[in-house]
Image 1: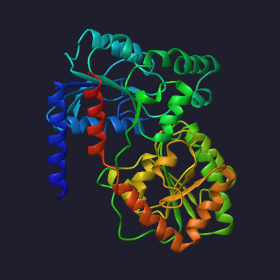
Image 2: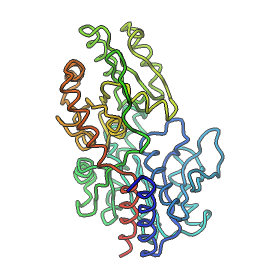
Image 3: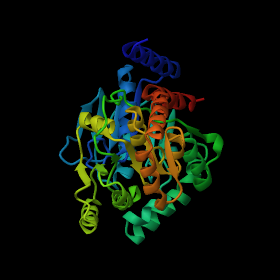
Image 4: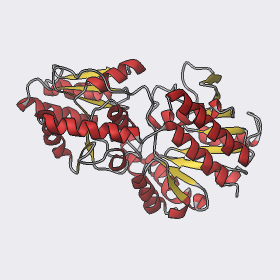
Length: 387
């Protein structure tokens, strides 16, 4: 069965599930849109699901906050995008707009809880599910003022969870499920792990970069800890003079990273690429010898599995999300402490046999992940919630 046949089969399955549940009009509520300058994995996730639902003939609307320079009402990948309100007010505006049926009636709802939810159990009736990528508890303080950080913590950890005790909760990994059960105190029976997929454009290349190269991809924000990767790169460079670190992504931490690179004299071997085109990202993954992440909080590790599909193994921190996306010792190496990053990266770069074995394992891991399966399982969860 080729890719086209697979797509037809996937669309048919989605159509059958929707028809069986009497669902034709599906709405998705999300904090940010894919076009937002700070869009990340959560926004990619919503888009991958929405476009597959739309391809199956469903009427899909994504409601989110404004994205500077983009229309308030548009279409993308076969579904409607409504961008209203600001980053904080969207959590109040979206429920009001839904209650007023400003986007028409709906038969099913997917709510994305990204730090804060849209309180769907309070106002939404009918089939619905809530997707939580990971708990944000430890992420509030580094990015918010003390008062707002405390408010975010209280809302996420104390106010919201009791409202969701009987809701259907989805999350990308078993480790993020355990985190939700422990920190949000939502019953395990209500939480289902639905792994992320990998887009089919990520495939192995024909060659690797001549110099030993590591790549990290993601938003330049505190919890990604890209500064630790820059420090690790400086340490690696001391014993491997041809080593290079490529950083892909944008974010408000960029000025601080530029200052650190200047202080370390690292411009010769650290490259800040910013945002890159889709086809260029694939090529960068293909050419890298290893992909790296020092992140402190993830629900998955989307960039790690994208690189895996290109045959590039990972070295990453052992945190919830990473422990599911990377198979330690098979598709990459996981480290417990930040000071272990440089030695682990150096080990993979120097050991050709290990790197080849991990690369094969990475390909096998990525081959088991499909956005078609993700979209189907999320739709099945929404359909099952009506029973």
